[in-house]
Amino acid sequence: MKITVYIIISIMFFLYLGHIEITFKPFSIIMPAWRVSVGVLLIIIGFLFLHVDSYKDGLDKGAKIVEQVYRQKGLIK
Image (cartoon, rainbow, N blue to C red; front, side, top):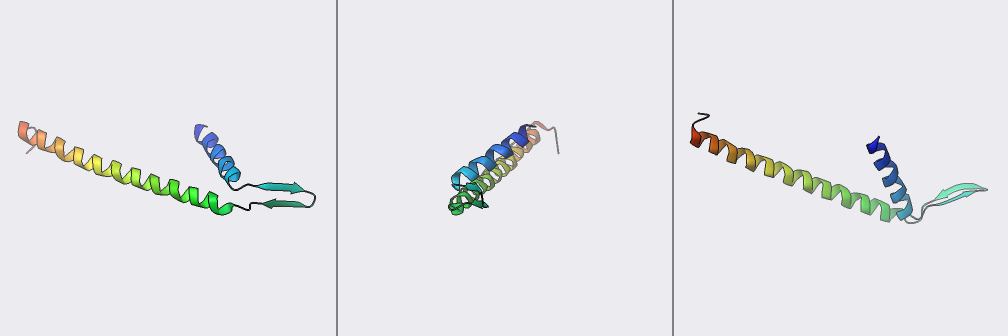
């Protein structure tokens, strides 16, 4: 449920960024600044990749530290 709300809010945000115009007679949907929405989306995806990569690096470093401590205490061989 929470994910659905986040998705709806993000779609509304991207439509707002793109200056969406909806007319009903004749029916048309115009988004003149769609490049802004795509640019912001790509920036967000880039930050997510950086976050996941740094999390993975930190997890690997932490696992090596724990392994060294266990080896020093003689818990693993």
